[in-house]
Length: 324
Image (cartoon, rainbow, N blue to C red):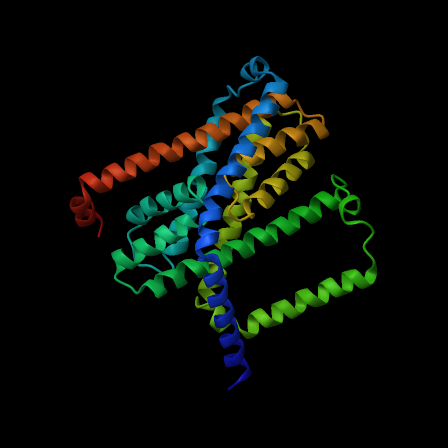
């Protein structure tokens, strides 16, 4: 057996063991309890923070600028719009029909659990396109890998930027890093890259040209989305420097990469208030802005889910006839 086949066999066996562990009955019972408990803790901490600032003070500092709400809509729809062009690389689906499914995927990921939207999308693709379940999962998996690569690459670039600009001193958290430690880290990174490219045909099915195009779309969307987020925040609190907003963006990106974290908006609200105190940003304005943003996001998700569900229930045949 060749080295590549041995590597693929090892990865397949490891994946089967991981799936078996994740699907263990005890773990399936613990996960929902842990998720609810963590959510209650987050809600309690956020409630305490808001109470400490003062509800009346927060109400006086709610965003009233129309541009804030326009920028919210642009940030909200940036991902499903970008994903229309991304998934059209692998699926021959009308854009309007695909956009509705991607909106629903976003709602599942935002409000149910991380990656639940990908499960929904793969099941829909299997039924709508008539492809195998494994093929649908493979298409979604490839796009998720490219999304993670683009987001993590950008996160590292931002982390380097906030460190270089002196916004955050990484040595405070990491200690003094010696040369041999940097060298070891770089060597491990190179070995991982070599391993990935050696086994890419077993880990990744998308052709290189399409993969580069999808990566470019994700990366462009990432830059656009986070630039819009900085503009949205700056509209409400214009006196804050761009360097400080870059730190906020970096923290938001890191939180979004944590799997199975419930209600990321509330977590970012909690962390954002603490950052505002640290960097002497008006905490009442920050709390009001993040609170409104979170409420708008949840309200928009609920409205879209109800609208899409009603549309599917009342006119499925007509919709497919007009869109296919």
